[in-house]
Amino acid sequence: MTKPTKTDLQKYKTILVKQLASLRGDVGSMRDEALRASDQDASVDHLADQGTDNYDQGFMLGLIENEEETIKLIEEALDRIDGKGEWEFGVCPMCHEEIENAKKPGKDGKKPKAAKATDIWIPKARLEYLPWARYCVRHQESEERNRESA
Ligand SMILES: [Zn+2]
Image (cartoon, rainbow, N blue to C red):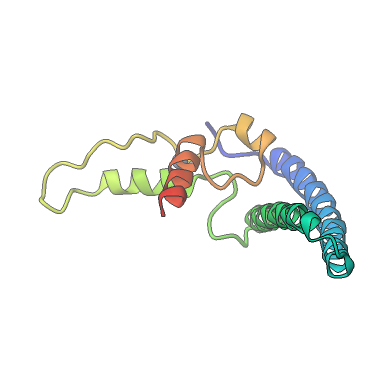
């Protein structure tokens, strides 16, 4: 894998900006709808209906949370493209760490373990599909596993 070119970066940036605009619009209207639903709850006397209404509202607010998470990821990716991020755009920081660690001798003085990662660049095919991806597929999966078990 190689470093994204300027043309690639421009392309990712266009996708990210568009996604961000559409997500921001969605979150606004979804929040309005969820709040409107809760206003109605207050005036409805049918207690039996309330269970499903609350469920719908919780479901919608859950979707909003996911969207807000995605918005955050997109904003971070845009910062990386502009050189203001925590690391360079297109790099998997965990692969980078793995390779760096493998270069150092272990604490016991033994030869370092071979890194599983061979390069730090997230494959282009993945970035075209998910330009806000923070990690390569392997590290994304281990990250998600960590979060679930936490
Ligand atoms: Zn990685």
